[in-house]
Amino acid sequence: MLACSRFNFANMRGGFIFILVLFSTLVYANDPLKIGLFHGQEFLRASFTVVKGQMEVVVDGEALLKLQPGDQFDMSTASGQLCFIKGELQKKSSSRIVIRSIIPTLFKIQIAGFKATQRLYEGDLLVTKVGSRLQLTNILPLENYVSGVVEAEGGARHTMEYYKVQCIISRTYATANLRRHEAEGFHLCDATHCQVYHGVSRHEPLIKIATQETEDIVIVDQNIDLITAAFHSNCGGHTNNAEDVWSKPLSYCIGKKDTFCLVMPNSNWEKSVEKTQWMGYLNKKKYPLEDSSSASAVAYFPSEKELYFADSSLKIPNKVIRQDFKLKSAYFSVHQNGDKVTFIGQGFGHGVGLCQEGAIRMASLGYTYKDIIHFYYTDVHLIPLRFRWFFAAE
Image (cartoon, rainbow, N blue to C red):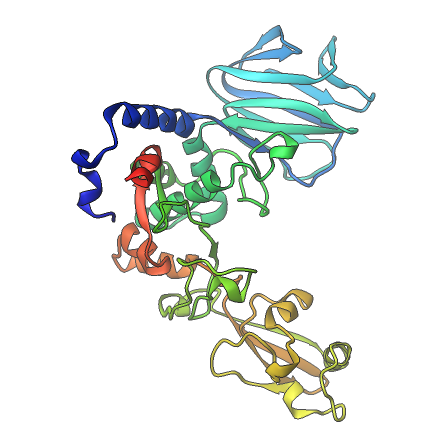
């Protein structure tokens, strides 16, 4: 954590400046998030149902009607215009439909033509037309969003300390990437491009408690900048430096040995492909093959994580092989098995930042959320988001 000297009010630059900074930060922290729903899906019609509470439909600024639990209606762009349809009532809009909560509300959305897409949401819903398709945007407080992300990304049946970790890194990621979809009219999407979000947390009560107990806490680096809170499923025993996976280093994402994840479900994996496919792939990459049984091509046994396959002078990145063959990680060995080649690997994901299964194991062994975060991220601090600018000014 930050040294206590950072709290020395005698060093403040002036009470008036502090009040202004504090006020502006509080407003920022409480601003609702706009989350683009069903991102990447193309659809012209969706149905909406109120599950709990009371809502109001506003079309182009006109309050159209109030909705009670059980009320349902459709939204469509099938006619080329944005339409609100409820029984005999139809209303066309030139720009937007807003369904806003009057009292705390739950609602569900069903996308026409897609299976298993019915999800529960809270907050408000903004409906717009983008080209010929519908755009649905969930508007809700940051902390409500965080609890939904933690359930989608972290799963159920884990410990409180692990959920606290996931809450903090999810909150940090969200607040650090609020402009990611600015051109599309929302802050973040609900897919893996940002963070997976399927609506409210419904299956694990501990998540909401963990969200409340870590409310507003984020991770910052030595410059008090929000970190890129990268995480992955399993590092295979050693996390990666950021620059070994992405284009630039991150001072807080430095590779380190991690034995906690080695007994977890995604620690080990195998995948086999036809030997001819593998040899043909290496040939296209200009790997020197003397014949179809070139030993180095089918007997690759690295003793530790390596960036490049076999002959590093050829610069065939293991991360590219991982992508091309849809492997779980870039940490693997290669074995010949008759007419096939078998990749035997460790870990699942890019390996940068926090290892989720390692964190789950640490939490089960009694480590606190602070211990876990400081283990995986180097030289970071945990601070309230609303006070971030105060720390940066010191």
